[in-house]
Amino acid sequence: MARTIARMTSLNSTQIYNFCAGPAALPKEVLQQAQREMLDWRGLGVSVMEISHRSADYQQLATEAEQRFRQLLNISQDYAVLFLQGGASLQFSNIAMALLNSSNQAEYLCNGIWSNKAALEASRFGNVAQLDVMRIDSNGHRSLIDLANISRPTNPAYTHFTPNETIEGLRFSQLPQTDGALVADLSSCILSEQINIADYDLIYAGAQKNIGPAGLTLVVVKRELFSQMNFDQCPSIFNYQKQDQNGSMINTPATYSWYLAALVFEWLERQGGVVAMEQLAIEKSNLLYQCIDQDEFYTNPIALKDRSRMNIPFILKDESLNATFLQQAKQADLVGLNGHRSVGGMRASLYNAMPLTGVQALTDFMLHFKAHHG
Ligand SMILES: *Cc1c(COP(=O)(O)O)cnc(C)c1O
Image (cartoon, rainbow, N blue to C red):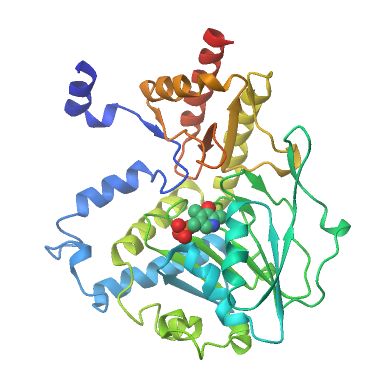
């Protein structure tokens, strides 16, 4: 009770760290700016939510957001940058609809739940070679297999992979080689590490992990690829080329999510951009893995070379303590730590908005918890 009152009287002094996997924490500064601008955006006397997406003010916001995003990832004009809806899951289908036909095949490298879902959705539109690239040994340890050691389809239309598997906590540290177009689902790692966009033909990400609120999906597609795409059978809003020609506004886009994404991109610039985020991600994840790896009390089952920097699942040696762990963590203002329902245990997601102090608070808590229950 006393605590609730303290929170109500001085909202800013209580620091809660939110480790939720998605929708995930946004930078506090961004939320505060959105709060200040809620009723009166740019002196218009109304909220940004309440104006036409075709107005000059909104168009300016939209264009600036795209430019900032392009700068952050060094994306040239050879690529279209689209601000779409439907989530990453719609892209599972949209990509296949555009690129698969009756005479080709796509390769899906599957290392977890999301990549498996992507393959399953794609297979409804054409021929998909689904390759299981995660190995689980008898101790439950997981690792990515060496792609050189498996047989792969020749000349696929494209190869799809998920550089960071959000649920299992596996990360590709090397790009897969392919003769086809390279397509990647970066939902849970976009803007957390530098990428060379020229290595990819299409990347996409749901916004709600590392970009902004749900409802927005970023798609970056090489314009050259349009000539290989067929949109005859699908709705116009799924037509990447048309969306490109219409500034992602064939219909009303997710204007408020787009606005918040723009604020996040500005915030990222102030932090030092993707270079700084990558350094921070390495530092934060190292700190947590070191804490987990000290002894057997906590374990993360992923091979060192394949560990995610964004999503770190861990289990307690004594799983009967799970509920107590989560409850006490919450009392210590560390929230969103429950593991995915399919994996159990705990998961800490360390997206860009998570400061180093949040991970320090978490590891302090974990050591303290171990001292009392170890
Ligand atoms: C969260 C997530 C998705 C699902 O995103 P939606 O926007 O909910 O469709 C897909 N892929 C990955 C890698 C994710 O982390």
